Image 1: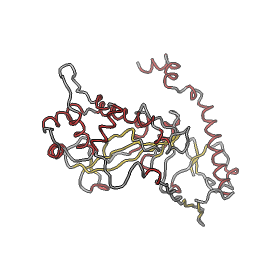
Image 2: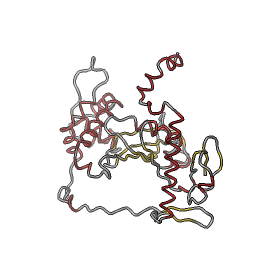
Image 3: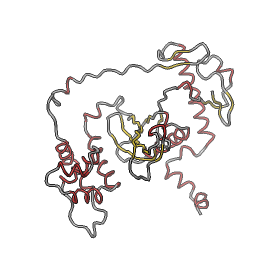
Image 4: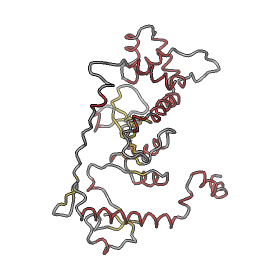
Length: 329
């Protein structure tokens, strides 16, 4: 059935997916061949001309890369907005943000037909702080005034749904996206750079997402919390999965899971990298720029149409070994 539909509605399906530019595979491969070869030329020429001071070559032909020092930022102009010895209560922060976004309106009971009324804003704030700051609901109830344990547990169990929390987060991110101050952190006004990374957390109770990982938890179980943020420090998506899974399987999911932040170029570490992510991100019009700790150990690819003789003088990519479809160094 699916195969018959694909053959019958092929053009319409390609148009709906926005893949018109990839209909002719030979043309696409030719463009990728030219672009990749030109980038090799540019990279090697920059090395020869001394424009890349971060690369050093060894006697055996290998190379090392040094990380440039991070530029120090001057925070003096912001001190008037954040004076010393003054603390803003987290409840006040949540209430102020809610006043502009009304994110609590997204935290609805899933059965509105049989449920009337909604919890107070104070109870929602207590739930957000108790879970978000890892305080716990019981302790949060004891240190909160005018909030009962039953009310707090009912709010978290029935109003903190996954869809509701994501919608509430989108409201906050949408407000921050419109502000001028966060956009001052963008390196290029017409390009948004995003990134994703995971953190490992030990889980001491039963969880369907937890799994054993001796590297991180020894004999215990844990999960990976994978978060996405952009260069303006907008945290626009997060997900949790087993600590034994590879992070690269969730990169595309995060890039496609948000309606507010639209990435132009995305970076991960080596755990978020795979050749498949490179391919799919290109089809979806994302530029993928992973960061490697040991770049010299990574395989470098080039199309077989490029002869070895033309690459004999290259500093990088001069000794290929043949593989199917492409050549790797």
